[in-house]
Structures are given as C-alpha cells and as structure tokens.
Image 1: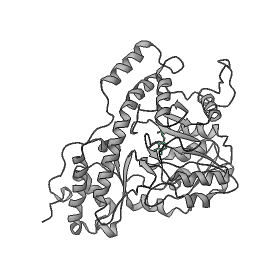
Image 2: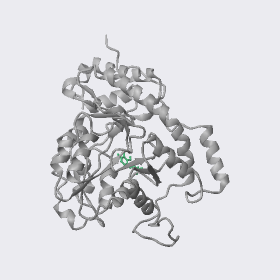
Image 3: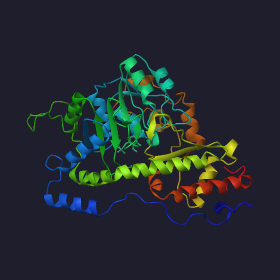
Image 4: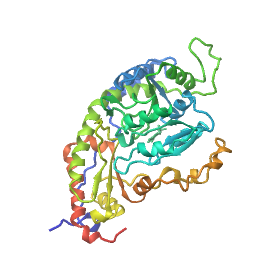
Length: 411
Ligand SMILES: Cc1ncc(COP(=O)(O)O)c(C=O)c1O
C-alpha cells in the first residue's frame, strides 16, 4: 500500500531542515577581527588575498591565481587578457548562467551558443566543432554543476583551430578531471565566490592560469592597468579597479581550509544519491564522465522523463517540496532565449555587429528540452549532511513513484 503523498494530504517525509549554507565558526570570526584591527582592509596593504591566491593556486594545480570582485569580471578579464576583440566570436553553452555569455558581450565580442549533451549538461564537443567560423577566437566550457566538461575533446578542438580556452569553473572548486584540477586545464580558469558557491565570501571571483604572460595581463587589468614597477598614476590598458578586499580574503582563507573535506563529502553523497535514483524508470542523474575523478556537486542535477516516470517534472517538484525536500527546476529557458538576446539589447557593446545574430532561432534542442521539462536541481549544501539525508531524498522519489497513478495528468 503506497504511503499518501504530502501533496495529496499525507504527512511530509521530512520535517528537519537540511544543512544550511554558509558554514562558518570561530576561525572566520578570529580572522575577520584580526583583519579589522590591522586596519589593512585592501589587498594592496594586507596579507589575506595574497595568501589565499597562493593556497588556491596550489590546490588547483596552477602557477597563478588572482582574486577579483566576482566570477563575471573574472571571465571578462580573462577574455581581455587573451586579446579577444570587437567582433570576435566566442563559443559558449546555452545551459549556463548569464555571465558566461554576458562577459563575452561586455568584451565587445559575440557569444555563439553550441548545444550541451542531454545527459551531462556540458558542452557537446561536436556542437562546438560545428559552431566554429573564421571569426572564432575562444571557447568557454562551463563545468556545469561541478562536473568537468569533456576537456580533452575541447582542448583538441582549440589546438586544431588555435583558440583560447577559458574554463568557467564557477561551480567547480576542487573538481578534478583526469588528475588535473578544474581551472588548470584551459589557458585560463574562472571561479566565483558568490554566496551560493561551494567556496564563498558573499561575493568574489578568481582567475587561474599557468601562463605567466596571461597572469601579468590579468593582474594589470584587475588594477587599473598598472604594471609592475610603474607609477601609481600610470595606466597602460583600458581597465578599472576589480581588486578583491582583505575581509573577503580573510573569510576565503578559512573557507578554503574546509573545502577539501567538504568536496569529498559532497562527491560521496552525490554518487550515493545518483546510484539510488538511477534505479527508477525515467529518472536520470547527470551522467558521470569517465575522466571525472572528482565532482564538486555545486548542484546535483538530474532529468525526469515524464513519459517513463509517469509524473511531470512540474508535479515532481511540487511533490518533493511538499515532502520537505528543497529543489528547483533551474533555468526556465536556454540563455539565448532570454529577452536580452532575443531583443539584442546589447548597447553599448555590440550595436552594429549584432545585426547578423539570430539567437531566437538558434538550434539548441537539448538545452531547450532540459529547461522546458526535464531538469531538477538540488543545491550543494544538502550534500554536506549525513548519508541518511540522501536516503530521505530517494525515499521521497519512491513515494512519488508509488503514487504516480494518482498524479497522472497533473501539470
Ligand atoms: C556558470 C557561472 N558562471 C559565472 C558566474 C558568475 O559569478 P558571479 O556571480 O560571481 O559573478 C556564475 C554565477 O552564478 C555561474 O553560475
């Protein structure tokens, strides 16, 4: 006999909250107070951001790391440092946050969307290859949800066509692809420390690279175009002040000390939940690619195929929420279907060249299907709880599956 769903008037499976985010304690308090009392609140004078950059670079297998104000600016600085210019084309996925493409527009360049794979949610290398034109200069693969994109294939395409690769690793702190940490595989990597991210200081971002010249260019761009040995009021490139502050550096140093253990826990819990959910017809957790040595599970992503599971995604979401399981459907449309792209509302960035773009009709069937009716997201902090929390989520799906006939036809 099926248990009655909370959505249909039954008792919710879960009343206790899942792990809240962010996690912090005495170390953060102490370090913030120390920074406060030092009076050195900016990176030009204090030790925190510099120490954080050294530690982050080491953990991510990079020679250089540079803290900046957020993970949008880090992409833009990377594009500028790589010499991307007006009218250049940059290939990006359509299943991503706005910044992956808006940073391209802000660099006066043109985002060209290549579809993602249905089962990994990451850029499809075949679609990347098909999107290349004589104007293509760069690719921005996103390690979506924290699983690395197919970087061997993407780097091979980049080598063949002489393209720059900037990894958008906003979700991928601590993720590892074929023994190489996210952020160390492309020419540049970009991270975000915004509130929801696996490593956070409320706001913040960082650029990684193993290329000294690119590192120097980024450093100059992030601090008003200054150069080492130059005068304070001497500016060499068009730029601004994108420096990360010392309070953020202090928090990030403490949070970084927690990251390794947290990442291991998320990965173990994510794999456990994926294995349990894969047993249901019509539930497809994000496929783990062969080279994924570690998934950072910024999000746990899955697909519901209504025709197989018997219940629509919209109803599954409502039923899960009623059972006390926090979840969402994620992006409602592929990025190029956003009004911004449909209306080409790019001023002051791309007034003339935008005329040739047709984002409304871009052929992106996988991304469109994911947004329209299939994806479910669970946020990263859930995966810092005990294994029994994963079992509760699996049990909620079981309850929904058992009640699928009662839910049939609901939208
Ligand atoms: C994939 C992706 N790239 C870039 C960003 C931008 O980061 P920020 O919010 O720090 O500017 C985000 C933020 O959510 C993101 O999800």
